[in-house]
Structures are given as structure tokens and as C-alpha cells.
Length: 297
Ligand code: KPL
Image 1 (tube, protein in one colour):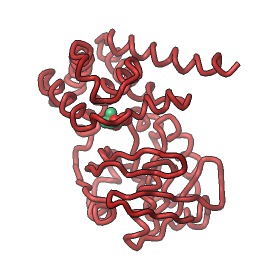
Image 2 (cartoon, helix red, strand yellow):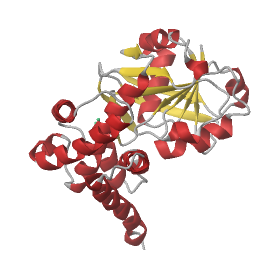
Image 3 (tube, protein in one colour):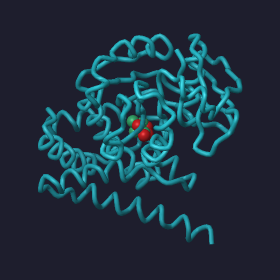
Image 4 (cartoon, rainbow, N blue to C red):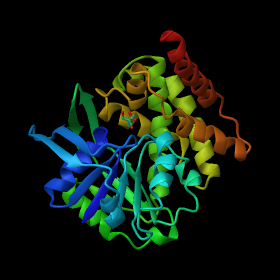
């Protein structure tokens, strides 16, 4: 298959490496156009793949049979819209990012849209991407045109297992959103690994309760008790991780807060529910981002 991967960060490089090893023709696509992109990945088995791939080739994009988007949530809609005129109308677009809200921004996109949620973990170590933990990628359709594309899960599963197809991927997306609403901002607040958050049970419960209330109103099947247990389980299973939001803050990059707690606050407001604990942490992260400018003066 001919596949373009938009975004050549940690997740993008892992997909490029895995797809190429499976015999697919791949190219990278960078927001700042480059003719090539380097992939330097240490895989789960400890083997290093160091390779240069072509990048930003419009002819390749025009023939692509799949576009995998691995950008940060706030980068997605502008970048995808910029490619839309060259991308074939039948080429599925698979969004793999934390948070929610990009689907609203991409309404009217002619290409079939798919959503993915992944638990694969990778971190950057200097110029090398280390694939730290294997995981599951749940994918499914978010537009009518994407509904009969379940064979894509098979193809992707052969490259980077596990990949599971869900007709109702929104459920997996909301569960991941709930986890990110709790772990990501709290890990910044306490400047700690995911595992150390287990000590802050009260905040975990308050945030989970608010997210569960919004989820219920949005028609998602959940309960406060189940969500708290689920978040605690992810805290345990990712105990050694530095959350993506804490990594962003430490590197003074824009975070995905608008698409994580910001999304829950907006959906809650639309449903007449206030989310004070989510709002408190949302404001805290926003202040941190504003401080970048001051710190660099
Ligand atoms: O998705 C994550 C992130 O850091 O963004 C979690 C699940 C919290 C793992 O670190």
C-alpha cells in the first residue's frame, strides 16, 4: 500500500518504520516541507532502524491510499486541510492524537475519516525514538464514508500490532480522553511521573467524576466508579511514564490542553454542567504556557 504519515515525531517514526518493514511504500510529511525525513527508532526488541524516507512529495501524496496523522491535536486540522486538494478523495485519513475536537474542525472533509486511539508508548532520547511499550491501537470510522474500511485494521495490525476495529470508536476515544484529563494536567501540577499520581486520590476522583458526568450526558456508557478504577489502572500500568503534557511543558511546547480538559469543559458547558476541577487545571496549564514567553525574555 502507498501510505503517507503526516508528522514525523515519536509516533510517526514508529509507524513509518513498522509499515516499511511490512513492505509498504511510505513517505513522511512534515509541516515545514523537507525532501527527506530521518527515522531513528529503537524497537521493542532493542533493534535500531536508522533510515531516511522521502517526504512532502505531492506526486506520492496524490497516489496515497492511506494518510496517517500523528501530529499534536492543535496542529491537525490546518495541516490536513492544506493537503486536502492533492489527497485523493477516496484516501482514508486516520487521526491518531490525544484529545478530541479535531473532528468538528474537519467537518466537510471529502476524504473518509477514521479515528484511532493508541496505547503504544514512545519517548525521544536525543535524536533517537525509543519504542518503550507495546500497546493496542483502536480504530474506527467517524464519517459515513469510513464505515466499510475494517480491512485497514488487518493491514495495520500486521505492521504494528495490536490494531482492533470498532464500529463505535467514540467509546474508546472518550475513555482515553478521560485518562488524559486526569493524568496529564495533574502530572504537570505535581511535576511527577504517572505512577506518583496514585498519592493524589482526591483530585483523581474529582476530575474523573466531572468527566464521567459529561460522558453520561454525551450518551457514553460509563460510571464514576468504573472510570476512577480505569484511571487508577492506567496510572499503575504507565507508572514510569512522563506524560506527554509534562514532556511538552518541560520542552516549552504548546500542550494539547484545549483538546483534553478544554474539550470536556466545552462539552459540559453545552450540556449545562460545570467542571470546576477541570477548569482549575485548564487555567493552570494555560498560565504555564503563557510563562514560556516571559521566561525567554
Ligand atoms: O496518553 C498518555 C499521555 O501521556 O499523553 C498517558 C496515557 C497518560 C500515558 O502517559
